[in-house]
Image 1 (cartoon, one colour):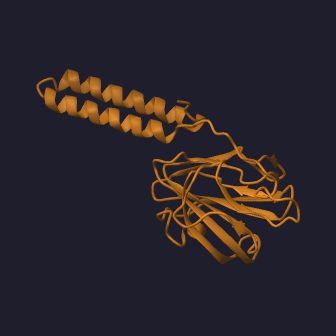
Image 2: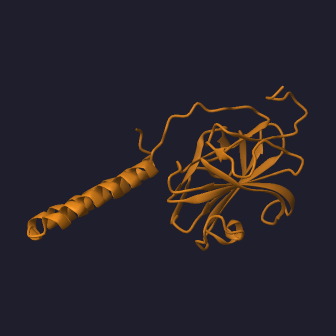
Image 3: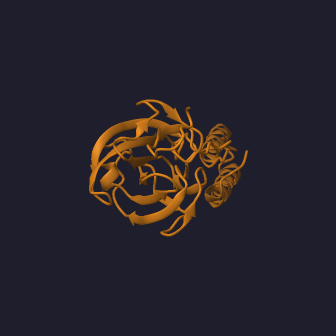
Length: 227
């Protein structure tokens, strides 16, 4: 199993810390072997949970110029028309994907194009499914001018557990559909804002896989991936 680069330092120091604690217990708490064994088992479970969180599985990416591909693994929790105040200042269709702690937390470019706008917002840590998390939580906003079609806005949003958002893009960058644009540590959400006439291909409650699940199709006037 491949481990994502964002997790290697955390895993190293977690393993080192747990080993030190366990060795210390076996030396200085030798009169309580049952407790020491239970703590060792708990330590192993903790490490494995963190290990699976930072996994980076191989993906056969789907790419097509008029499709919007899921930027993250998770579950669709919002599909609605809303007013987007930060960049568009008009009504857009919002599609939100909730990422639980057991999901892969790599975030991927949903379209190919040029980064037109980027901004990091410090903020709160409301639970990721809270309606105000999109505007109140720590988050990044990325707007990409698609190679074909309109501007697409997407946000990484920190949740109650997440305490760090990592991004790899800046304004002016050329990005490719399916490539990593960031990582969110320990639970979160990604919002995508598209034109209201965009044809949504997912439903509320549907599971998604980053880089593989088609979530919407843009109206570009060209050929359709679906025929």
